[in-house]
Length: 266
Image (cartoon, rainbow, N blue to C red; front, top):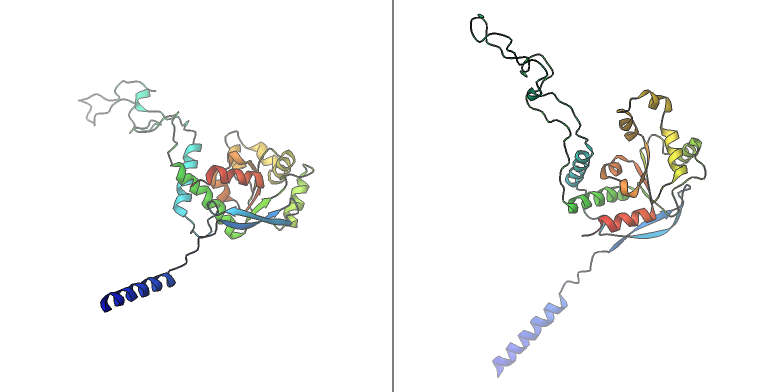
C-alpha cells in the first residue's frame, strides 16, 4: 500500500513538471509589412502585408541560386548563329601543296588543313545551335524570391498603388522625377502590369542618345539598349538579372501580386 502511493505521487509530480516546463513555441510570422506608395510623388499611403513565403527576410541571400538563375537566362538569350568554317566545308582545293616524297621538305597536305594560316577551325560549333540550359523551376522561383527580397531588405523596392505612368511623354518629366527623388546615376527598373506609353517614351527619350543610337549598327543596338540606366519592362518579360542590375525597383501592385502567384509556390 505504501509503495503504490509513493509510485502514484512520483508519477503525478513528473507529469505536472513536464506540463509546466513545456516550451511554448510560437509560429513564425506569415506576413511582413511594406509601404504602398503613389506615383510619381512616392508618398506612402498605407501598409501592405506581404507573404513571407515570397519575402523571406529571415533567410540569408543565396548568391549561388542567383548565379544559377543568371547563367540560365544568359544561356537562353544566346542566339547561336555563329558561322565557322570547318575542314569539312573544303573552301580551298583538295590538291596537296607538296609531294609526299622527293621535295626535300616535310610533307604538306592541302589548303583545307586547320594548321595552315587560314580561317578554318579544327573543332567548332556552327550555327544554328541551341545554347540554352536547363534549371529546375523551383530553383528559378527561388532566384526571383531572393532578388526581390534583397531589394526589400535594402529599402530599394517601391510598390506603387496606382499606374506607373506619367501624364505626358516628355523627357523633362523623367528629369524632374529623377532630380526630385535624388536618383541621379542610378539604374532604375519600372515593372508594369500593362503597357504604359507615356512612361516608356519619357524614359527612353531621357536615357537614350539618339545621335549615338543612329551611329550604331543593327547588331550593336540591342547591346546599347540593354545597358541603359532606365528600363520599363512588362511583368512577363522581367528576368532575375534585370532585378539584380537595378539600384531602385518600382513595381505596380498587380504586377507584384502576379509575381507572388507565379513564383511564390513552395
